[in-house]
Amino acid sequence: MSTNTSNSMTISEKIFSKAAGKDVKAGDFVFANIDRAMTHDITGPLALKGFYEIMKDKEDKKVWDPSKIVIIFDHQVPADSLYAASNHIMLRKFAKEQNILNYDVYEGICHQVMPEKGHVQPGDLVVGSDSHTCSYGALGAFSTGIGSTDMAAVFASGKLWFKVPETIRFEVEGNLPDHVYSKDIILHLIGDIGIEGATYMASEYAGSAVRNLSMSERMTMCNMAIEMGAKTGIIEPDEVTENYLKERISGYQLDPHWISDTDAKYSQVRHYDVSDLEPQIACPHNVDNVKPVSEVEGTKLDQIFIGSCTNGRFEDIEIAAKIIGDEPVAKDVRLLVIPASRTEYLKALKAGYIEQLIEAGAIVESACCGPCMGASFGLLGDGEVGLATSNRNFRGREGSPESFVYLSSPATAAASALTGEITDPRKV
Ligand SMILES: CC(C)[C@H](C(=O)O)[C@@H](O)C(=O)O
Ligand code: SF4
Figure (cartoon, helix red, strand yellow):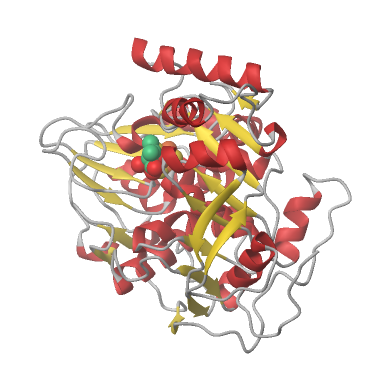
């Protein structure tokens, strides 16, 4: 399976060694073979135009390997403008002509659909033309976001240049207190290291607190690695990974090779104990402007958004529904719930959580990115304050440049929906 027999590599170095066909280490430049490439409805059109530009003098204008490319419509779905509709038409045609798997407007957010449908495995080198492609590190893959022009080159050749990143290892120990989740851990880590703290590094999350996380919670952590500047977030695969993949890939068995060697070299090892961690919140207008929720309690909210590739899975909806119970959403606040995928939506529906949330006053939309990046519906207007379970709160991210976005766990979001103001979930 691998070319590497050395015993001092990080998981990321092992993956690049496989992808380069020779042993490589952090700092090396490699021309790597890509295992999987993903594009979506916003960046896909530019990638396919770039691809045809590269192929313009070739008679055979076929992508390198259609079985390794996945197209997913999620950012502007169902088409919310004529512009989006024409992008969809262009991509559908491309997928059909090239025989590429295309998850159309119904399936959900790319970063949920990719792992959910079994397109990612430990040891894979995955690229996606979206910055949160780093999410799939939760499965022990090296996955990273690339631009549309690089994606065009991948479509044509299946290869891409990389500098093998250094790894920064976060050893996170302790048992999480009640109402504190992996979102609180990752917000805490980003608040601590800053938005540029891990620039061009692999952020490897380890330690007992990480081992205890479900796959959904691990995805939340890896998803936000880019918010500390990292090239990827990555977690060494274990039985949680194996169980997740066994449900998706028949006969899947974990390869023990895909973990960091005990004497692997890290650029930095940081230690955390989360036994006393309070619920965390990122305040406007930066993801590293993180505080304990208790410090901003009482801030009035206009909209609460539970969803996105960060926290829109069944587990997240379940946490929110359990906190909301039979209570109504506070007057004067809009609660928008958007499951991350059709599959997660159905699970929540069958468990009764969707009905419960709608009865409480929530607006539930079909799986998509929704207001997460302010390019579709559910936008915040001038002066409005939003709380979201997503991953970015830059100025104007969810709509007006005059609006304000806070980021939290689904538990904090649900507790806040009951009061209409930022509320510590430990108090409800
Ligand atoms: C549209 C896309 C390029 C963008 C990204 O790359 O992250 C979006 O998904 C986001 O979250 O801002
Ligand atoms: S849900 Fe948000 S962060 Fe995730 S891919 Fe969509 S726009 Fe980007």
